[in-house]
Image 1 (cartoon, rainbow, N blue to C red):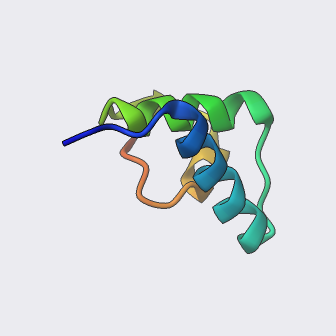
Image 2: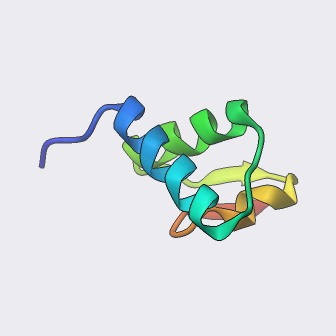
Image 3: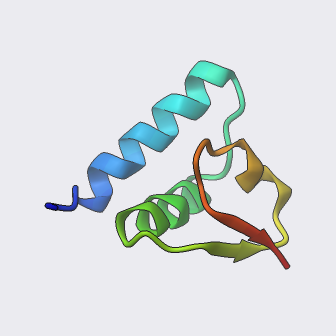
Length: 60
């Protein structure tokens, strides 16, 4: 499977949040995009990551 570049993932995450009316900080969109690109579980205590659909998230 060919992975999409993080720039495309960033756009998808940002657009999804925009459609929901639930923006999060730009740097955190990049973090989520890279987690998606590499199929990682993001470990964070920042609750706004819960707004990102289908993100594998573990609260720390």
